[in-house]
Each structure stands twice: as C-alpha cells, then as structure tokens.
Image (cartoon, rainbow, N blue to C red; front, side, top):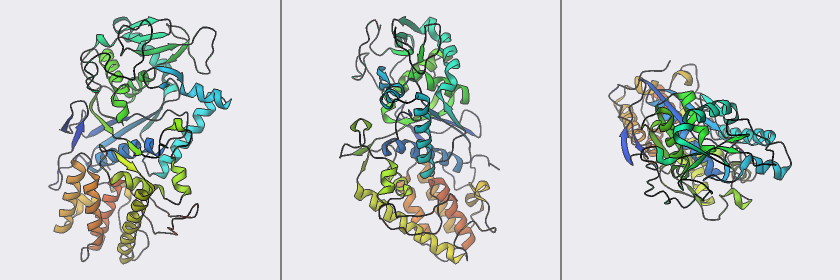
Length: 456
C-alpha cells in the first residue's frame, strides 16, 4: 500500500531543476500525494543507441525517487511510430516511411520490430514499466480533433500542410531561451511560413504520392506533425496541468517549445502544460559512433557482446549527474563494471550473514510493499543517519554521484541490526533501480559474461 508523501524526520524536500525557469524548485504536486510524469519516448525507426537509453535511465531514476518519497506515480512514455521527420525541425522525410522504403517492409512491421527491441533494452536496464505506453498512431483521431480546436486562432494552411503560428502565443521559445524568431539554426525555411519558427501541425501527403501511414483530415490526407503527438497524449493520459515532463536536452530547443505552444493554445492560457520540464544531458562518444546516421552505432547489445552487463551501463549513468555531459569510453564502462562487482560482493557478504543467498526471505517484506519500509522502520541511529543522507542526496535534484557512495558505505557497515540493515539496503537499491542476486560467472569475455540480477 502506497504511503503518503514522507513526513518522517529523515525526509528532505524534493528539489528539481526546472529547465523552463533555469532554477531549482521544490516539488509541489498538482494533485496531493500524486506525481504525474510524461517522458518523450523513441521514434521506432531504428534500434536505440546507448545515448538514447540514458534518457530512460534518468526518467526511471526520477520515477523511483518520486516513489521513494511516497508519491503515487503515474508515468507515461510515448512511442512515436508516425510523424517524426528526419530533421527535428519539420524538414525531410518521415523516419518510419524512409526506413520502410529502404528495407522494402511494411511500416507497421518496422515500428513493431524496433518497439520490441526498445522494450528489451528497457527490461535489460531494469527500467520500470510506465503506467502507460502511449502509441502515437492510436491517438491520430484525437490529434485531428485537437488540431481542429486550435486551427482557427493559431494556425494557417499551406500547400504542404497546417502550420502553427508561434506569434499567437505568449513568450514562444522561453524554454530554449530563443531570443529571435530566426535564432534557432536548425529551422529551415518553408515557403509561405509566416515565422521561421512556425511548425507543422498536419503534413499533407504530396500530390501523386501515397504514404503507408496517412489519414483523412479537414486539411487533406496526410499525417500529424511530430510535436502534436506529445501534447495530445500527455493531456489525454495525465490532464493539464501535470507535474513533470522529461526528455533529452536536444528536445529543449525545438520539440518541447513547440509542445508548450500547442498546450498554451489548447488550454487558452499561458501555462506550459507541465509545471516542471527536466532534461538529461548528452552521452558523448569521441569515436563518433553515437549517431545513427553513422551506420554503426553503440547499442546495448554491443556492450553485452563485449562482456558488459547492462547494469554496468546503468551504474555508469548514475555515476554522473543527469544534467552533466557523460563521456563514454570502454575504460569508463569497465570501471563501472568493476564497481558493480564490488557492490555485489558486499551484498553477498551481508546476505550470507542472513543465512540465505538471496534477501527475499519470508522474514522480510515483499518489495512490492516495501518502497519505504526502511525509512519507516529504521530505529538504529546510524541507519537513520544513512537514510537521511541518502534521501538528502536524491532530494537535491537526483544527485546520484553523492547517493552511491552512501550506499557503498552502508554495505561495509558491521554490528548493525541485520534485518534492519538489509531492509535499508533494499530500499536504497530500489531507489537507484539496481537489482541484486548472487554473482555468477561475472567475467568480462564476449558472450560469456553472465550475472543474474533481480529487482528487489
């Protein structure tokens, strides 16, 4: 049973960095005791690379922290299977249509294949399932209705489609800190656009062409613009306003400002839709193999092939603050794996003292009911102190580089009440999304390294 948000003395107020205001803000939910979060998901035209997956490790950490703090979490992640063009600024071909043409396959099969591949990576990284996977094509009728509702006051029609006039809403581009209409270099000119930053709400199928994904609309047969999808799905599943919207820092410049403009138009207000906008920074790879356009890019499967467990990559992400750039290297990943092995060795020592290789003994509460039992039940002064320090780190904008050493120190502690000690460890592992079980053949060799981990 979910507890009310923390009121115990070990708790600290949750402070998050809001990209919209560029300030740290104390989290205050729209609905008491609840946290509603929307995360921009993948465009399923190709496999996700590990840089893409950093965004979902971050979103999972945020969700787990909200659960740790006692909030009832409703998390939505969308699947973009239509509408996203090869350029984020409404230029080029639809990514799904382009890949389907290259592979001579059905666009629906392309979307299904890469969605399932993404979900496999989600599972491998111990990322919790959201309350809703919102599939863009399921919401096209709602998108058309949404566009109808804002078209008269905020849009205009061109030969290529229906465009949103950004001058019709207040303070367009505040999120991106754009100072002029032509300040964003990635926005290409479309003949007839009133403003350089205007963007497509609906893209008409060009005369003489037929798309695999197209729908009838008041503006002709075609498909929705990419930016429209998230506004429609977030409002449908979370209501307006909701608490937090997350995504990669690249979304901060075009995609999210366009979402905000649509939200303002549809709600007839200056509200951005979400109270807090949060963005993780880039994963940097100096070899140039992070971009999918390179043809060969870093996937989680390659890491596994080289003998690295996915949790080593998760730990590598947690070692850096989500708002900082994280540079990828094989040496850095190996260091993270060594650190993970050391953590697991300490867990093994602790649980062996309990008389079982696993720590899901009947003497301990089920993880399902134990999001915060360690916080509620810790009585030993040193454990209370550890929990307070750990909670303070997470509460300071998800500061995992400070939280991890606290967990490691706790694992090395001796002469603490054993059952309470284990409960406290379990609670911290839950918050960080680290699953543990006994180690098994954790050797770094291609295809042979193996470790069994379970969420606790």
